[in-house]
Image (tube, rainbow, N blue to C red; front, side, top):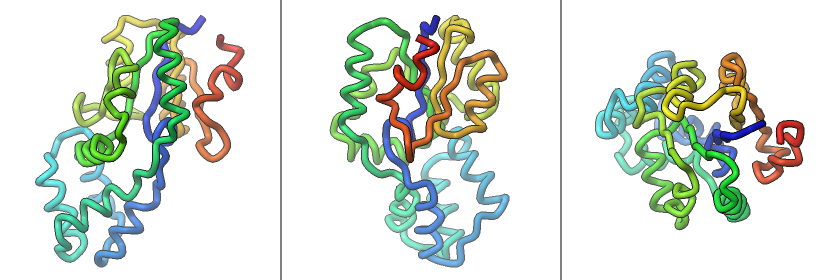
Length: 202
């Protein structure tokens, strides 16, 4: 029986345009996704470099574009947050049947954009017992240590836990620890279909 549900954020609740950041950075200059760039992105996502340092780094990769230009390009991945998904998680929280947790690979610039552009962000966040963001806990998916951190933090049994994420490598890592998973396809599935899609677990 499932007692805890761990939700990803992007492409589970908020819609994403994942190629958009690279596309928009490329418009600013001679940008390419090198190993160094990927490593720096990951380091920012776990909070090992601060936002000021990251913006300066982005500027250096695109011929010193303005701060505003690189921030807008970085945030281009973020789209809309459909209201019906907020209604779903609010209803689920009000029923108090499950421990609800959020676990997201994200960063300060993205969260700041969400706080400023999603009017109901605080209401959404309040639905969860814990709201784990990679840049705050210095861990990121798909590394197993982030899942162990959450399991240990709440003393929860992986076999009584469901993890929902749109990225297959993340759900694979969680499943290897005995956690039930739903690798949702954001193009064809919606988190609000949870109980019909995963009815075998409930």
